[in-house]
Image (cartoon, rainbow, N blue to C red):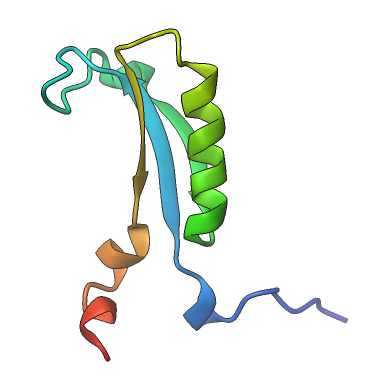
Length: 84
């Protein structure tokens, strides 16, 4: 017997959380691309936000460190947001 996924395809709105040290706080330009912290891919914004917040709080003492949430579902299906 196979287990069913907890979310349907339409419910899965993938988000990527990653971060790194910026070389300049005025723009998003990373000091070392090889040192990026790929936190993970999450099935919805709420879970991605929790991961982002945890990582951001862990690095609060480093003013150059920034974490971001990328809406992968918008890149994978750009027409989704236009559907009404």
